Picture 1 (cartoon, one colour):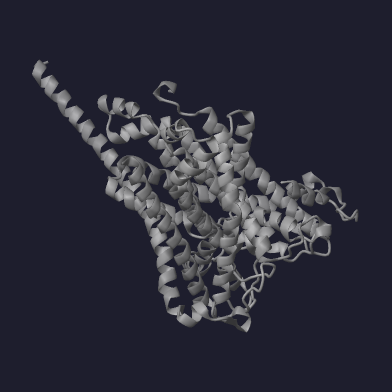
Picture 2 (tube, each protein chain N blue to C red):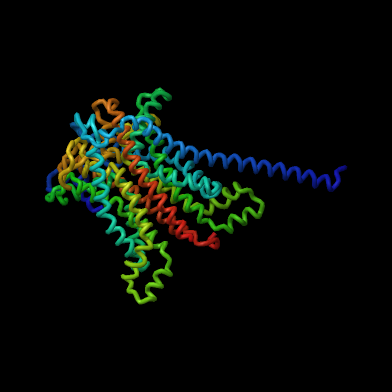
Length: 308
Length: 278
């Protein structure tokens, strides 16, 4: 035993440093793996959008956007689809927004917590998780079906489709509106009540205006969800070929997402309409991603304002 | 829900709203029957192949989406510098907002031919293709919920661990992830629930064969695909096929309902109130 105390300490320190280096390498490895995961996500978005732009852009022209489809939808423009998607998303919004905001106001400003509230919240959360095809079936059995079969007898129409989509986006609107109401500081409410305003005046004149940007963000996200939804309108509103603009809300319409679906799975030579499919997809994702970008920018501005 | 049940019930009772008789099927035979042949001369109403299709597609897509989603969440919440975060977060949200029909179309038009080329198989539209597409739809859901969970871990825990000499990665693995486990499970459950209910992707790229799959390259027909594909062929409220599709929707609804209940239960029971609860 010729090692001195200081030598032993030195060896120990070396061992510690070795172990520390190994721990650093482990950390390095895992952190790079995490970065790699993010990279895969980014690539997925980039590749999908890239493909649509690369193959879709050549198909897009003024005639494509504003023309009527010809040859059973296998050629020509997609104007009726754009109009149909517009009607469906605006219609569903017009139905769901007042209802959703009212529900959010009740849930956040009036309701007392308790078992009933917990159940209502659970129901709303579950509604948000229901598969869209189930909403489609519900819409078909309730809105589309003839009166003697237990439905409202609207037929396959814009009205039925918009109502189905409204039910689908309602939970999203309630959720985001409630979030917006929650972000309004209680001092606002107290100040207004302190000035002698009634509870209703406080909500209408103070809380709602303050929550408006948040509600707006939620609405934009919901519209984009409604615009991209296919399964819910398949049996309630969509026509695969209808080269006229809808005359009333009781007509069936073409819609962008359904057009993509019906062209890409049609038995008559889907290869031949590939440019058409890419073009329609590009229009749809431009619409949807554009709306989402607006919502994201709006929200980040909102956050900055709240921080200040 | 009421409609789902009333429209589905004739499957099992054999009588529709008009009191007309159809050949009903028992609930057990419906769930565990291994033949789905709704339009044959001698129709069979077993949805086991459809359930297995859904289960396998969901499992495979989860195997891809869960690691990817949680790793992305950890990166966003713990590692990313603020500048990178501001780019990556919207990117994940945009990925979430891609319409499912576009992802389905991508799988059909781009991924399927590539798969045919690489694996030398008979069908480009198959279980693996659908699973990969579904995975990229589930990742944003998992990421955003998991990130919230990781964020809500109290700073004291993290600081305590770092002060004891643990590296950042050791802190993440041994302190932050266990502390946010309930949130992470919620994220995973909701992600899976989204995969199992997603319709357009499985309708377009899963292949549509109502058989119990043997390999990951077999075409399958998950429940939502079956409903969407066959509803157009049935006559409204008048035949067994129609009621059976509603019964499938009911099964689907119950499955996602249970997933959501479970997520809600976990979120409530293991609610992180403060560092004191650990």
